[in-house]
Length: 244
Image 1 (cartoon, rainbow, N blue to C red):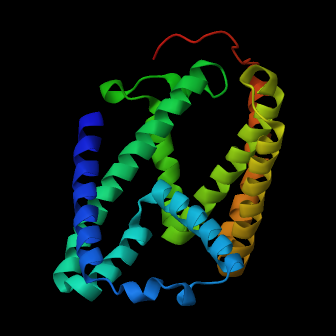
Image 2 (image 1 turned 90 degrees about the horizontal axis):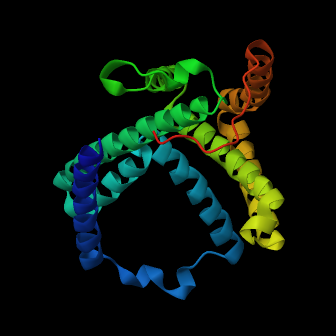
């Protein structure tokens, strides 16, 4: 999987390099003059939305972002440019799915081995693949079948922003050991929660089904965790885990 990831990413970087060089050679640089700049508040808001959007699209398949590049390429490369970038999008899709599915399954395997997930996630199945890989893929298919790409991307972004805020909050308890600065940690928490609020507002306006699904999954996940602990009695292992 590592070798296939190298190939797909190399092809995608080649496509993007050609797009960048060709675009710079034919760009209208007058459009970058200071008179054309947006107000500072607009720049900050746009930067936050770009972070949210592309972080989510990377989780799904980079499909919506690369479609925008295909449209841009069509303006200065013609119809062949649209096709050229679309081919790159296919490689980006393969790379994203490869990294996301196998990476998530490996994480599930490791934390299940430490007692935080059911034992089914740390059992090996076909070709030494953990059973968690197939369960993760099945869950992805459920969301893809019931929601469009942009909704799945926004839910993925919301989940990551929540996780980032939670990890930063955990860092507050470990700052004596890590040397972390409380002001910076609190700033990261505030930014993550602020962007999550912006994302939630956008979802409520454009995709209420995705908004309520994301909001409803939080208590469901915590409830399942509580029920799992009560039913199995599994405890978290705090010692060092053996190498995978």
